[in-house]
Length: 116
Image 1 (cartoon, one colour):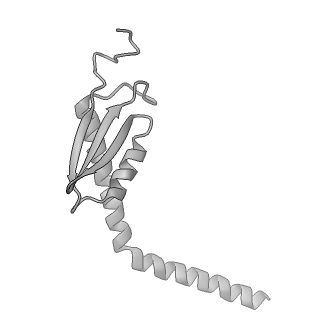
Image 2 (cartoon, rainbow, N blue to C red):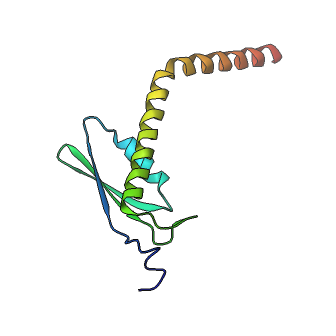
Image 3 (spheres, rainbow, N blue to C red):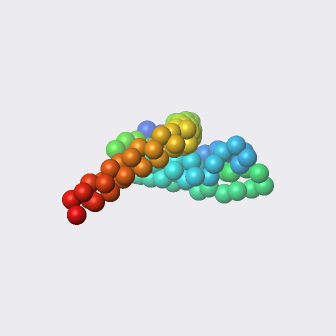
C-alpha cells in the first residue's frame, strides 16, 4: 500500500448516517453534503421514512489528512446541525427581513420618483 492509499493508517471506509425524514429536511442534508466537497463525498438516498447519507472521505482532501470514520461522522453531524439552525433563524426572521426590504425598496422608489 502506498502512502497515497492510506493516510496515517486510516482506511477510507464508508460511513452511513440515517435521519428520520419527518424531522430532517432534505435541503439541510444537501447543504451539508455541499459543504463537505473536497473533504468527502456524500450520497443521499431515501428509504421508506429515512434519509440515508453515505459518506466516503476523499482520498486527497483539501487542506488536511483523510478523516477517520468517526471524524467524518462528527463533522457531517455538526454541519447538518448548523444548516438546521440557519434554516430556523431564517424562518424566524423572515418577517423582519421582509419589512426591511420593503422599506429599503420603498425609499429607493421614492428617491427615483423625486429625481425624475
